[in-house]
Image 1 (cartoon, rainbow, N blue to C red):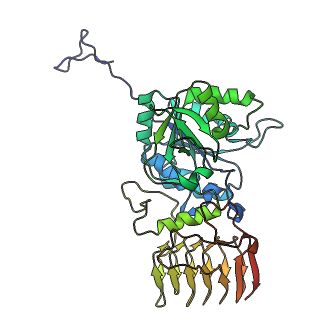
Image 2 (cartoon, one colour; image 1 turned 135 degrees about the horizontal axis):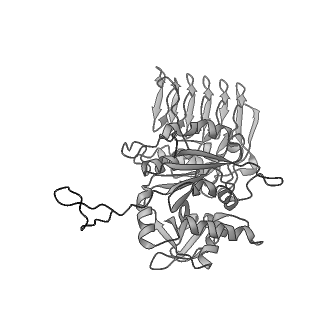
Image 3 (tube, rainbow, N blue to C red; image 1 turned 60 degrees about the vertical axis):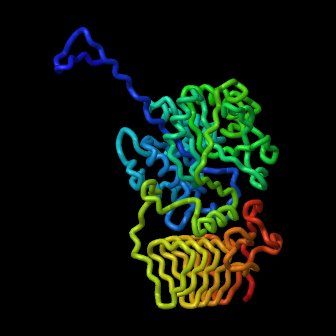
Length: 437
C-alpha cells in the first residue's frame, strides 16, 4: 500500500490499495499417450516427438500455445523412448524457456525409493511431480497433452476459469457422427458445468469431447490426487478416474468450448489424414499465422532445391529437400530427396528419407532415413479422382525407420487389412509386406 498526495509528497491520511494480479498458471505437459495405437511410428520415439507438418514435432503445439499465452514455467513429463524428445526440446531454447527461475523442466521418471520407479498412470505421473507445481506462486496449473495439434489463446480459458470459480476447466469440442464412437464425452448443464463423464461410444445429448487441455486449481488437484492414490478401484488415469471423482465429489468442473482447430491422432491413419487436411486450399490450421507462431527446434539445413525435373503441387516441403521428380498432395520433412522420375503422392515422408530414380511412393508414411531403391514401389494406387484426396478413404502403407527397400521391390499393405479403410475409424494399420516387383 502507498500513501501519496497529489503533489507527490508522502502523507499519512490517504491510502491507496494496490491489488496484486493473480500469477500466470504453471503448466505440465504429458509427453505420452498410452491410449493411442501408432504402431511402428512410435517404436523408436515417444508419440509427442513425432514429426508433424514436415518441420514440427507434435509437442511443439502445446509448448508454443503456452509461450504465446504468456506461460513461462512448464514441465514436460516423459518416460518411454524419450531421448529424441529431450534432444528436440534442447532445454527450452527454441521457445525462449532456457532461463533460471522459470523456463522448461524435464520431468523424467526416476526411482525415489526401492520398488517405486516408472509412472503407473497419468495421475501418478502428476502426483510425483507436484513439487514442480509447488515451486510456483500460481494457484492454478495446466495439464496438457503433448500429442494434440491445436492453436488457441489459453488466457481466454484462464479468464473463464477464474470468473466461474471453477476447480477444473476442461476444453471441449462438440462432436457428432463417427467421432462419437472414439472419444469420451461430457454431459453439461445450462451453466456449462460438467454433470457426468460418458464412456466411449455412449454419448449423451449434444456430446462434447474432452481435449487434453485442462486447468486445475492446484490445491484441489493435490487433494483429489492424494485421494485417488488410496482408491483400490482406480486405474490412476486423469480422464477415466480423476475427472469423474471430482464431479462426484462436488467439485466445480466447468467446460470451455474450444472453437479453433483441434486434432488428436489416435492411430497412424489419423496421423496421415491430419496431414492431408493441411493440404486443403484453406486449411483449418493456419501455420502461416505470424501473430501466433508455432516454434520448433531449427535445423541447420540448406534451402529446398527444385531441380529441372521437379513437379510439385498441393504439398508442404521443409528445408533441405531436393526434388527432381513429382510430389503431389504430400508433406516432406527436412532433408528428403526425390530422384529423377520418382513420384510421391498422398504421402508423409519424414526426415532424410530418399526416394531414388523412378521409384513410386503412394498413400504411405515413410519414417526417417528410409531408402526407396530405384524403380521400387511403396503403397497401393488409389481408385479416386485426383482432386478428392482429402475426404476419400485410404489404405495406408507404413515403412519403419531406417528401412532400405531394394530396387524394383514392392511394399504393399498386409492383405489382412485389405479394403478401403477410413482413417478416422481404422484402429490398426497393417505391417508392410515385401515381395518381388
